[in-house]
Length: 433
Image (tube, rainbow, N blue to C red; front, side, top):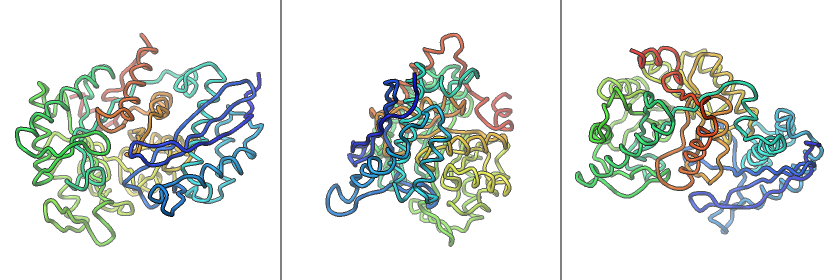
């Protein structure tokens, strides 16, 4: 039966912050249907795709009526009759139709929702789950999860400068066990915070919302929580940080408000490197602002043999920026967010570029999320190796963790947990010692 696109429809739904977002629905001539919902970020790089918002008084200016209308008026006619299995062709048509590098004319939210919905429709038309459609005959791994325990930065009223304090359990042996370990550490961290007094609620992505006196105190408490949960910090369970330096840095330097410190790039690099020497840190994301490749390169050169250095705002899921960072010696891992670039195909190109340099790759959610589970399938089907969703609470997060458990179960005896193999070779070698 025909896999040609018969209809494309969009509607306004709501994300985890109670803000409007776009859901796209694609129906094929064979009756298969695919749906996907666009997420939205709070800390956003200047080079990423731009959501189309209506402005005005309604919904605080965050309405998406224009983006929804663009799907009906322009995108649906342009894709009509195309083969949904030709994801690259569909995505090229979407990019050409929009005509801007940041998808700002039609709206990054409209374009990404349609691109992902086409992927779902193609898989449904073939009668297979999305991850298997992407993997085809390749053997793929269950990714290593990176899970938030404390939320800070733009996700928690800037109670800490560091945006995400996370953990990773590369020796867990299975995805299911990695989640169980996370649950133990998450609950231990909550108890410690209640005892110490800095607990202030729950942040955007579900992690504890802290009120620490310094960034170092947060690292101290997280290390203690790992031990209190019965694990060995730096052996079984490691800390991962999303510093999101773009939020407190610019071309003139950086300011850690919680520590009352103003620094240039060299001092910022020294600070980050110092944290990795004092704490059981395995992964660092965005230790420099989006255009500060020099500081990223300094950090990578100093610790890249033992610590994963992830580019997010500096790369924004663009293959060309991955190449530029690699040439500068900056980063050894890339964060992949489909809505940063706007289409599934372009996101895969960035992942492939990172992999070609021997980097680790991490498929990631955004702070403004929904029950959509597309990224779980991308992380497995693309064999990304790592998966970052947020914390271990809130349904928009748990939907993705739970979907990964279903995928693990469906794989049966073929299920392989990425574990240490998820990292660039030097970091993986450190874990194997």
